[in-house]
Amino acid sequence: MAQTDVLTGRCPGCGEELEIPAHLKQFSCMYCGARLTPSELVNDAAGTDEAVDGEACAAYYRAHVLESITNHPGIEKEMTRSNFVPAFERFSRSNEEIFRQLDAAASAGAITLEDAADEFLNQLEARWDREASWKRSRGAVMDTDKFVIAVFLVPMIRRMGLTTSEDYCKILQAHWCTRHPKSPFYLGDYEELAGGFRKKFLGLCFITTAVCLREGKPDDCAELTAFRAFRDGYLRACPDGPALIDEYYDVAPGIVLRIDLSRDREARYDAIRENWLEPCYADLRAGNLHSCKERYVEMVRSLEKEYLS
Image (cartoon, rainbow, N blue to C red; front, top):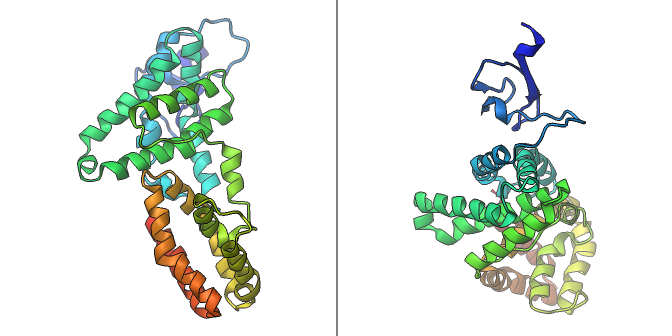
């Protein structure tokens, strides 16, 4: 077949290079199986003088933006030190093209970022209305989607560094908070999030630190000082202590992130304080170090099951 009879470009889903017979109106990516049309192929050729088809780029964004949520079920559970970075990279490879197309559409004047943010939220809320789980557990569904937006989507868009990245994220956040004022989220940063899993010095005290900081206690309060001494002394000297500490390093930051982005975070932290930390602290003050260890292990594994399993 002559070269003029072949279309070339990258699959917007997996990024692999494709060569497609030009007469096809629809085809499947041979690598990931995505169903595509010729207009959806990504062409990276530099130096082209062809004008950007802003309307086509805007249509692509509208057609695919909800997939940034629907195509990643369970990703909110991938919040461990070992899983977060690979999950984030998979998410980015799958969704970056949506926001490159939005950037091109906005630059061409085919869509405003205000309208783009509203389009995304309108589609998201329409999906909620269609799902039976929304009727059963409104808060849980909203919290899950908000978590994916705050921890994966917004950090991905900001890391891309597009002309529209920061403005779009700020507008999306503002529009979400206007619609759902009781369930806000912050603008996350990938390096900051990934760095949270590298802070080994927090270890066992990560959850305790989050509870104490919420209550306005200083980082050197008696409670945190006692837990850190327990970690660095008794627990580290236990035969299974180093393995337990490493386990906490892996899961604790993700647990705290899930709680922080919950609409009822205050009640969740209060429950952790009442059910786990106060009994643990009482054990420490009484010198019952083995009992404290058992309680803390039970707490972390219970929270891991609730938020990351």
